[in-house]
Image 1 (tube, rainbow, N blue to C red):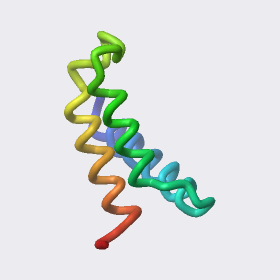
Image 2 (image 1 turned 120 degrees about the vertical axis):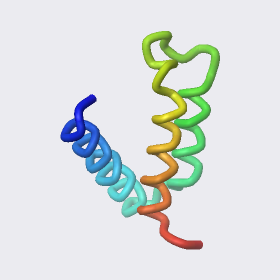
Image 3 (image 1 turned 45 degrees about the vertical axis):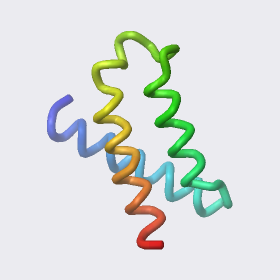
Image 4 (image 1 turned 30 degrees about the vertical axis):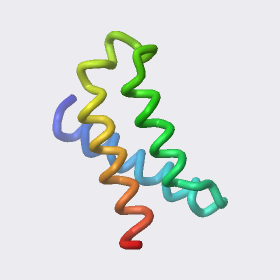
Length: 69
């Protein structure tokens, strides 16, 4: 993914997480469940090489939305 596409994907994830938080969804739980799915043995084979980086991005975006606790 190019720099622009990566930035666009991150901004999209931030918007989704922010919207979810604004309607009362537990963002911490949502992000942890997404990370578990990405790292599970049942994950898509084509996604496995990107799983660790994706989990990192989820964590960074979660921190931006939740802020310091």
